[in-house]
Image (cartoon, rainbow, N blue to C red):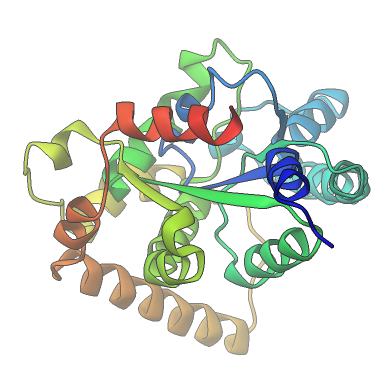
Length: 266
């Protein structure tokens, strides 16, 4: 016979997992700085260490062909080391925060199911910032950190921002009451309109476009063109829609989000 005391004890000892979602430069880490009873897991810690070991500058937006090649190998090695580490944390039923972008919905929802099956309480905090804010923070991150944090290729930030923005409704539905949305962008909170994509590309993308890439075949050029057109359409459709207002109306304040995180782990 299951007693009420046993149910309460089980509920109070469930391990907890917080999954952060948001583009690079959204300011996700600021929402977990006060948490002291959970491990913070971020593949970037391994990536940055590997970049330094390989002698690659963390200012990846200005990387040449050799540095980009080394960076790709550094990330592959980081993922290879990170996956078994997080697996051990999960099997050990430890509280943790996954500090990533959650840009790929497939692996994120697979992880959610695995955690649920193991008895974890799960919370997602989705941090939204405009594409301009994400690109601007990425551009200045290396300098602001005095060379200790990486700035990504802005093209990567663009694609990741689009992916995580596309996933908003999916995550909101999948996580239900365990989904916390917050807008971390002062300009958006003031109601300032989004900048058009061409303006952002001209300012943040084109100045860092690599000039030392390998020549592409006609098929590769055509495939790249189609991919770029589709990406631009998705972003332009978002900019011209009411989606930002929808996200804002479903979001809580930064203080409320931080409070929810502290309460979740208390």
